[in-house]
Image (cartoon, rainbow, N blue to C red; front, side, top):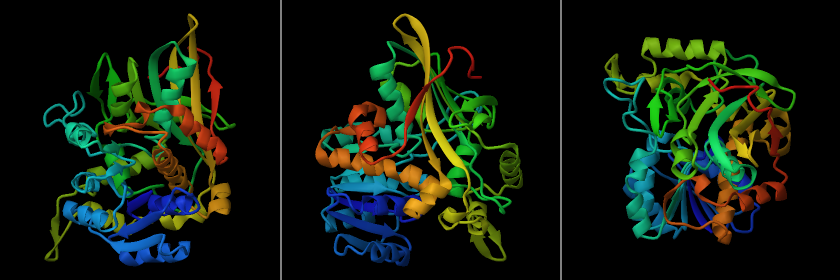
Length: 408
């Protein structure tokens, strides 16, 4: 399979490195706004002409189309910030090739009641074009990272094998991960961090989507692997928009263990207007405050050897099996120091990046097929989890005592 990978930052680098020794990876074009970064990665992989570097402006759909056609690729893999989803998505469609991303098109809060009802929801712009993709027989696989992505696969697996009735699906993201010595250092893009954490979180309940206030619904969730209870809060996330489209669940939520200190800093950023994306004039120069924040915040790709602890991401499912209540938590755990030692990759970048690589293999082999705009839960989870086992990627399921820990 020939792939155009757009973005060679933290996750893009992980995707390229993990795909480098896979037989299905015929050609991978490494494209970035910073061509030097893409070229450095291509040189490090040392498999020219299998890996080719190119410069691209991800804001330009026509540039995406032209580069995809120039290299006759089969798939456009989007590994940049969600703000660039739509031009890359449209560019892939115009090139008449398949598409994959790890984060969907951005939301826009309701103008009058942002903490009650959605405005433009995550992914709405992409799903509005589903008929165009289907009519061309092309697949746009959206939300195919760690979370969303593997978390959705876990839910599909639970629905297929572990439950007769699905009642609730709750994704919980936590662990004991830290970056010692840094007052403020997000584990992934500051742009994505701000979008997820400061936008109104969304919840699926009573057959519809609703919004609530950022950082609401504090809940102590008992993470496995000896980590224990960690407080999680509501955060806007794609699973809540994807899961109910294919799985018959009454409720879906996403909560993230951010920590009080990190939440306080995000609230201060918002109060100061540093999360704004509209430009302001500073000494005659127009600049977006969020770009300034991004420029002075440590780049996550540079912190790989500084992470300590474990990241645990999983899917908590509540329902019925054989007439009795059942609850399971399927999860993936990654130890930061182990990942750095084995792959020389930042732990969150690796944890996110291995999933599109697994999905690419399933597409290349024909184990996953489809047309239109589809999420991970639209596919058979079994071959996906089988590949995790083949490549020795940790995943596990624990039984939870029904009713012992109630989502709030």
